[in-house]
Image 1 (tube, rainbow, N blue to C red):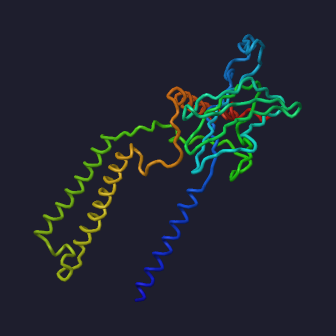
Image 2 (image 1 turned 30 degrees about the vertical axis):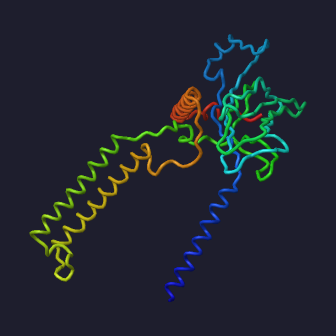
Image 3 (image 1 turned 135 degrees about the vertical axis):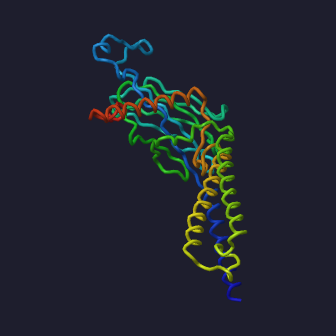
Length: 309
């Protein structure tokens, strides 16, 4: 009777907790901004060569050009609409916005535009206006700036129901831009099957030994006699059997989930191949710069050396 009552209480508690989890998840509203690129066009050019280069944009010369690309996504469970104030990036004085455009939309019918307004001595503002952003919809913004704007700690502001007033630019997770197509890893699956076959061979070897020396195994327990020989056999053998069985199952699981087990969790954004290649190339170049500069004790990479204006 007591056990039944305890089971009912635990079942009711688990039901309440699960229901609350899915209710909170279904009502969560979230807007994510992820940095993709932050590069300077003239980075790495020798000063004597740089002095002979002239960059013209819309019929005027520009000294420094910075390319800033970031992704804005609805990574929550509810649609974002009816913004009182649009998502806005404030650009400080000393940094000029040369161009602001929408590089990619998902879906293509998504209505969004970038509007640049000057705010006099306080700089300028880039407003990203969209009437509706449904779950898993996103767009990619490309900015061309004259000057140096640090991406570290860069925030955007928005005024809409159930969202914080400021959104900070975060780094895009490595798995977020991968190809979403399913791929079964046959090589990994074959290796997993081989490991499981080896585990089965260990079980068969134990079975054959049990036929000739049953007193070494605790079955049946009434006839089992503890000895050094049985402990030396059962403890290492059981450990190896468990290890190889678990390893084989993990390899099969990873093969089913495309080489990752447990499968990667988090947002996924199907970016165009050209944009994915650009992001990957830029991150690899920045990583190599960080390594080379750390070896010689130089300052941090250029993207981090630039001070916020």
